[in-house]
Image 1: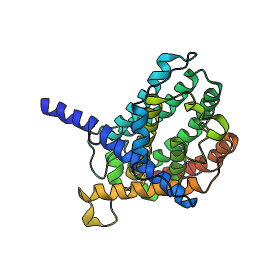
Image 2: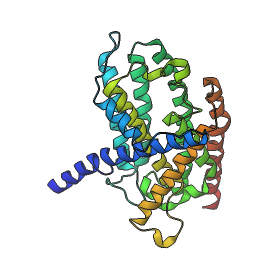
Image 3: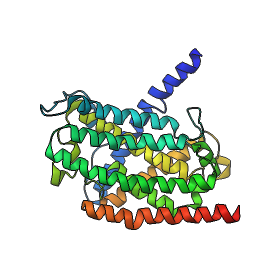
Image 4: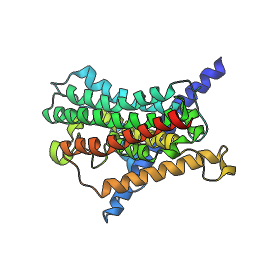
Amino acid sequence: MLAEAAWAIFNLIVYPGLVFSSALGLILWWLQRKLTARIQWCVGPPFYQTFADVGKLLFKEMVIPSQAFKLRFVSAPVIALASCVVAMLLIPIGLVSFVASFAGDLIVVLCLLIMPSIALILGGTASGNSYASLGASRKVKLVIVQELSLIISVSSVALGANSLRLIDITKSHFGWYCPLAAIAFFLAAMAKIGLTPFDQPEAKTELMGGVLTEYSGIGLGLFKLSNAILLFATASLMVAVFFPGPFVSFLAYPPWDWGWHMVKVFIIVAAMSFVSALNPRFRIDQALKHFRSYALTLAIINLVAVMIYVSVVR
């Protein structure tokens, strides 16, 4: 019993929990910034820049506005970070699930990964700042369309794999037969992370930082760190659901499958960076129309196709 408790604490704090997911998330965040800069003919930050940025913020004082709802304002970044770390415990890396997987753990992961967006909304509305409230209202609209697209796209694979257990979905390899759902998931993931052209809630040139306008010090650092982990978690979930397994059969065993998983995570983040660098920010109405016209449509078409396959072929 003591050994199990120690192993659970190790998983939560070290691997694949806080330490590992923070390090990989900050590396991926640096990769995204570096590739975006290179595509735009800039030099980009050095490798350690994201670590320095977050580390500096975590040791600075957090100024709480006098008009803020203090409890909600302070607890929002903690909720965002905690939900991302716990989600990493449930997402299989390769063919390994670090926590005893259970039926329906896919639903738990989707709920955990929506919490950072909800925390941003809570923090923005609690700050008492008009710019932050406007950013929070944009985030609410985006969350509705992006999460609907993401859930429907993942449901296609879950239905085809006949399971809501993530490790079973990974082992089924059914995600490779759902390309339209993968595209919808990719677009929803970019909006979830807040990459251009879906960065309307922050929109520094319009809203002075939007939902994060009043955050500083450790509060801002926790939000930045949670977003870096969310980048890693979302890309890992996409690999586990849509692109599982290595391309060569004899590499389909640990630790090779772990390496293949990480390679595909880096490829997905690189693709996000490429799309982000080549597109300007949408207006909020354009972003909503984009999801209704493309992401949601692709996800529904793929879901209908899987339903027909399950009903007729099986």
